[in-house]
Image (cartoon, rainbow, N blue to C red; front, side, top):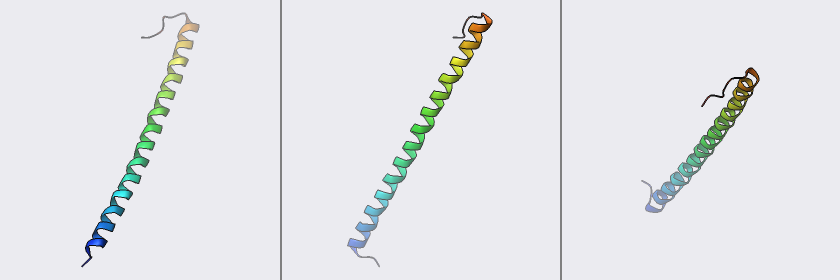
Amino acid sequence: MPSAAEREARKAFKEAVAKVAMSEYERAQQAFHANRERLKAERLAREAKLDHEAGRKPKT
């Protein structure tokens, strides 16, 4: 049976691992959203250019 000190150490270790995993998840989510916004802006710019070249009004 683990001692109180071992239980505390395991608890602290689990919390640290969970914190690292969560920050990795958050970084991945931020990168995903930034990339999605960049791609959306590029798509809208392409569509606006095509609309302009075709003489159409841009979409809103």
